[in-house]
Image (tube, rainbow, N blue to C red):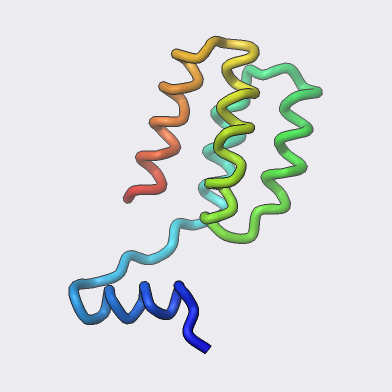
Length: 92
């Protein structure tokens, strides 16, 4: 069965090198650092969701909730700045 991942891997090996997937533990730590000054209750809810992540792709689905959580306590500008840090980590 051909999957999207197998096509992506084949494309990368044919037309250039593929990047190693991001380290999920590092991404989880980065998210926790971004949430460090969010009240404990909200941070613990996000921690549960972050602990369920198995792949870096899962973080994409949590990105909106992460943005909402940060912006609720620190504003949208701060949330955008913090997620830019996370985006940089994902694009390495």
